[in-house]
Image (cartoon, rainbow, N blue to C red; front, side):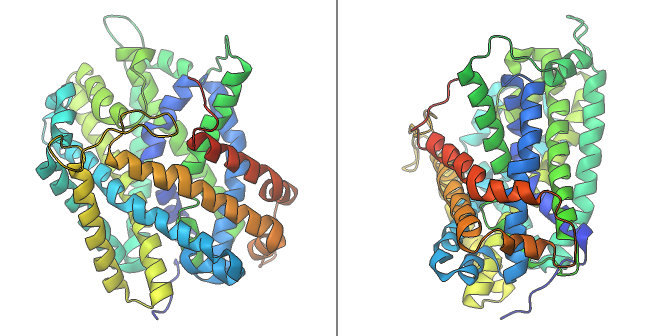
Length: 466
């Protein structure tokens, strides 16, 4: 078995873990949810949950990884043999996510190339994305390029690959996010007189006029679900990265930094997107998912005139960085598990998993081609209508397996091996655990209840309106 590498220090770990957490969900889901759910009110709820619910899940998984010195596939069984099943399911999650995440990464790569080569106006046509999506030869080509890039970085290892990439891309990503956010606040629609600052007001000022109890419940559920998917827990990544974290580094401080980084980027994604969309398309232009990034935003850039082409290129470059750092962490979670469980060499693990992801990715790409046997339009239990094969993979990984893993983790740590297991690991060098009382309540009672609610919503047992 290969000797386990370690991050060179806290900075390498924080940037790598933050790179995993800062993904496409921050950019295309967070702004839409904030716009839909009362602006500043959603932001307040999200921040409260990040400091409690998010902190609990993050520090638990990183501590499990560092304590066992194992990836998630084998770490849970080391804590308690009867809970080894959590590791198996947590390993299935990144295995399911990698193929379709690289496909979406390929979409981002395509749009980055389009804008860098000065063809942004073409992308503003609504038919552009649909035509690209339904042409398998192009989606497969960009998927494979993105997948190969991901494999190359993970092939190079923890230090020369993941850490080296994160130390370059994460500062660059943050600079791009801040720069585009500032630019977004300066724009003005000459026809209507609406400015970016009007859009910022719409984003950050709480607006709960006419909210019912059901609306407040929906906001809390939306914020909690977004946070849960955003921070990269329950998919083996944080356990794996925790296993690369040195014993003498300050784990609590690093987790706090990841929280801060992820929340700031999510907030700034809203500052980038909501004012720009509000200025040129009004609040009716706000939507979630791929449609926001690939159909709405290009129209906004076109409306900006000559600046739109440049800003669009920078925007998609930023999204590409976010997608790449996340896909690298997803592949690493699978590869690390193969190394720990089966004693495989890193190069063989990367090549074999890369090949599997390529085959599955091709099948998913054909799922958008109407004449393919893989084409489908299915309704999912969570209320999503007319979904394709990619959406089914996403639903299984994110909406079913991830909540199950997180609930199992809470039961294991909260009730079987007890919270002291995590607290002792996190304070092994005498660090102060500032939220100890909160952590104990969250991991034993509140987090399992909240996660069960997420699962019930995903299964369609609880239905959210709006």
